[in-house]
Image (cartoon, rainbow, N blue to C red):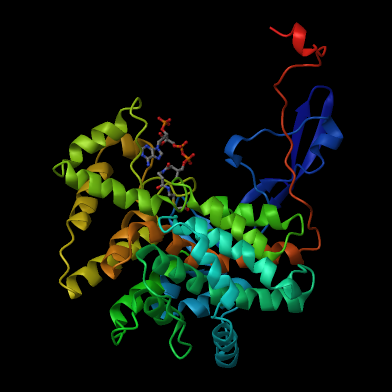
Length: 429
Ligand code: CMC
């Protein structure tokens, strides 16, 4: 393979530089294409479009490989805390002891919300979806921290990163407390990131709260495996919004909205709702698979399939093992887990799924663990957001620091009416 690709278009012959990544992924640099030929590329859903080069996350969808900054996800999930992995994603290296302590200290200092911000929660309806609350309150951070909005000032960016990482669990836990009508619980800074989140969610003033080490460990693992996934819909949104030099809070708030959809992070909620529905209708897995295969039904097997993975999602492997371990250890007999496993076996032996290379993704088993933790279904996508936050921050920061940064502004092929005469209202049919 040469270092240029040759393209003939009409009477034009152009050479497109070939860009090769560190894992030998290959891209054709078309940045001069329009200038040289007058034509653009068209790629609905960006199936073949590389929007950037990036040094944060590598994934090989054919082989089922996922690495953060070069480290396999399996190794990080086994040995690290979520805070450590967040540091790795955001700053590029695993922290040494001093760096880890410093980072954890900075996160602890910022866990509380401004008391006026707490009042916002009074205005949200009690049945509001927590993802709506999450994106609203994160967007509102820009109103409280006007001292740290300049995306090109490293000190302001540094403090915004601490604030976001520290406050997102608090914002999320308050959304849950609001939905169940319980008093808000303040953060406890002597706890770890995951322990603190669990106590803000489940402690009540009338009882002594006992931390559950198994649940904190399972949460740590879940957050790590959600940490980053290169140019997915929400991360691309964060980059897109940030490319206009919007501040970090605004960019992350937009990413939360993108994550909410059921084809992306919202699939974990949709997946458990699907499993519940199968259970409620008698647990007939085969009948459900048949409905999914019927193209007129418009039903998808939630938690299955992926734009990039054409193999078992390595995150699903890790989560399934943890799920199995946790449920056994705690003697939890969740019929939903049984149905999920039956559904997986049925799908993986069915030609429809085999031909299309559809495997369980990260959302297929995560909901079972969240249920075991006592989280309501509406909080599942919020958990995804907490896990994905360091990835979003890392991409936003990488883009802001890139010398070639440009505003993201795709083109289009216009297919509407050509110029036509204006008719006054009285003459319109
Ligand atoms: N159930 C049934 N059929 C499916 C599914 C599914 N979950 N996913 C894809 N297909 C079929 C699809 O109908 C199409 O069939 P055909 O070739 O006959 O038209 C073929 O497989 C290719 O699908 P696609 O929609 O072109 O693939 P995509 O890359 O655009 O979509 C996806 C990827 C994740 C949106 C899709 O697989 C899906 O909707 N999955 C269910 C939702 C889900 O679990 N999302 C979470 C993704 S992982 C977490 C995250 O990063 O957000």
